[in-house]
Image 1: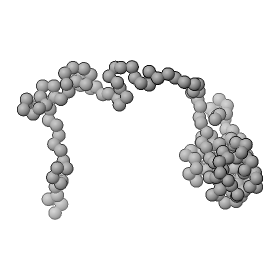
Image 2: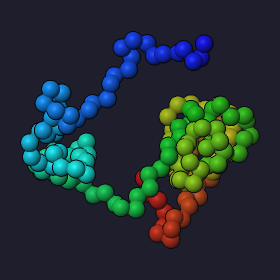
Image 3: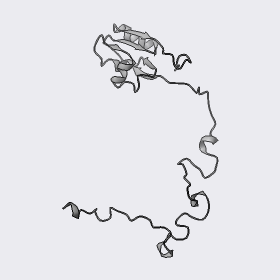
Image 4: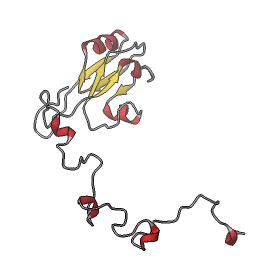
Length: 157
């Protein structure tokens, strides 16, 4: 029966055959209009291309200072650490394997949102004062050791 399989009626559309005479509706310019970049061969327009008009991204003003080498912290809240067993030693690699941060090689900052009752030992690149207070109040500890990055010092938040 496999040799008799056919697609459902109306599910396949015939390809557009351009430049095949005036009766086809796609003769002469083959559906490309008259002149311009779209009529030429080998042209592609990006989705953000505005036909030569000054693009939106260049019309809007730049605001603030954006340091080129900035690597923002990956944030983990105290409430997310409550799932670990008491006495666990948590470093960026452990947080990445648990799915709390996407990458172990980027800086991690512990923030104080939520509550924690288990005592865990956390080593991270930064921790807020509130997070440190909550973790130490639950019997845990926080070790902050910022990593150096490409010899340019410490990544800042």
